[in-house]
Length: 206
Length: 231
Image (cartoon, rainbow over all chains, first blue to last red; front, side, top):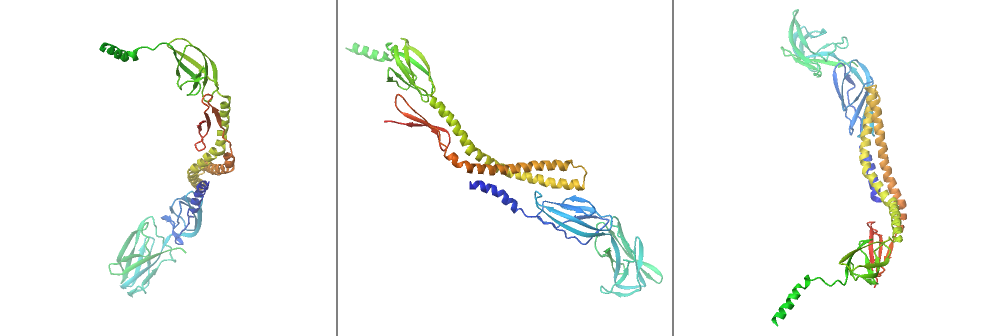
């Protein structure tokens, strides 16, 4: 008789011992718009995940590849299910989507130019007097954002060029090219032919 | 003297090949009864064999076989080398009653003990299989419902999966019910089965006065023969 009862109880114990899944998202507050993102989670003890985005798109996968075409305030509801889907855990994560914008250019080194200019597709921006020695703590700065909104187009290859001005004529100092789909470093760096260290920063819209 | 001895020796050697005198007839008995049967001729118990040597003429004969009634009759043995004698014995009505009782007894044992155990074991064996099947279909149901909500407007896939999950669910709980029902039935009927009186058939050999019993082996639940010797 006892053996029968054990056989009845064992499956119930096995079910009870199954770990409860834990849904987890540890993304940044802002995700880049206009590029293909692979979104993954830090969930544990799950069999499968469902993703429900606030733009009414749903996915069943451990990670999601998608493109946010617009800048928006969004949220995602992630549900982690156990084996058999009898147990689940839900986490809702609010986030923003934003394009990458050129923020500023910082230059470190010794310069004898009257000004330095950053050029990209979409515009050219120059700063004040560039004569002198510029350090990490006091670099030469050319601001772009928020006066102008220059989007880094992630779906294309691009770059920036740096020019110096001396005695009314411009001098080409260097050019950097990137595949913005894969290159996400911030800042983007360039060493000019005159030994200046150029860093171009980008930012998301707040 | 010598020739006399040779003659005697020759006769002795040929003796086995010479037919005996026809003072008895070989009677081969075909008795429809049990495997063994006992015969008395004129009240005298014959050796256990279906072939007997009987002197020609009329004799009182009695034949008995276990689980059958004793047959009394007359046998007219002709003066021949061998003859056959056929006799069908009537089955003992008490033995027939015993067989009916035994059937009833076995049915009660089956309902009170065998069936609950078989049902419970069937439940124990099938429930883990059905548990995993149910689990798998539940997972598919959740996924199909989600897909229906977000991907497609066709509900047939989700409905089909849900129907299969419901079937798997019903089967799983049925298997649990079988375990619970089997154990409960066994527990409730255990004492009733233990108190069941097992049928017994007892008969005595009318010639040797040996008694035998047919009962049911309490361990293996199969009929068993017992022999009681009376001295």
